[in-house]
Length: 143
Image (cartoon, rainbow, N blue to C red):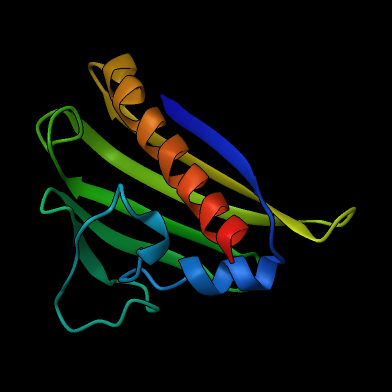
């Protein structure tokens, strides 16, 4: 099963990429992300970096692709319905593409996972990703 959300961000792709490429920084995600705790010694711009979001979501950076403006991460554990007991193989991806017509950025947030309750996971995750993408858009709209 999968989730899909997207938004147009009113900023150039390089500006947006600077905001999202550090796995340990989600200032743009406020008010939805209230706390990001880096776990371990690996910096947020290196594969293997770990974080805990809002004290609940344990995640690991699996890929950081500066050439293709893409971040891939896993949710290792979290609240239901994305706990280890309910979901396996959870992979989230944030990808940016330039909108050449006006210099803005297309931001896409997708995920794939296995679960006995795939619709419950989608119903939980899609609103979160939609809200975070809106926060990213609004972060640049205010700038």
